[in-house]
Image 1 (cartoon, rainbow, N blue to C red):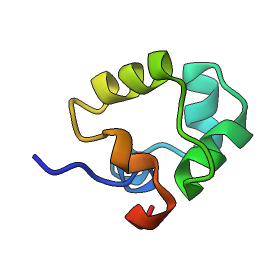
Image 2 (image 1 turned 180 degrees about the vertical axis):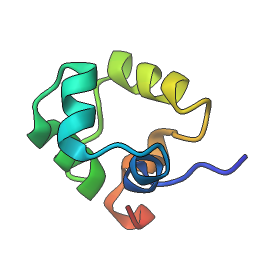
Image 3 (image 1 turned 90 degrees about the vertical axis):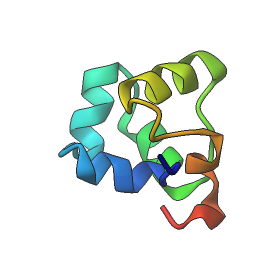
Image 4 (image 1 turned 135 degrees about the vertical axis):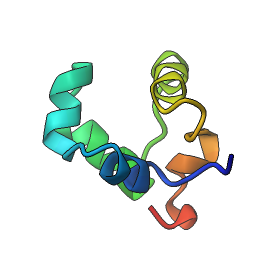
Length: 68
């Protein structure tokens, strides 16, 4: 299975940025930064997101040049 951009995964999973931020307990701005590739989640959160996505997300999902 290919690694996909975080923003694409959010859409596929049916989450809005705001709704997902509330679900995982982070500020909406954090999710926005992840979608735009401005920031990469901390390692513990990154592992959680990879688990939630069943391996569809990876470190490359959060790079601005990945097209998210």
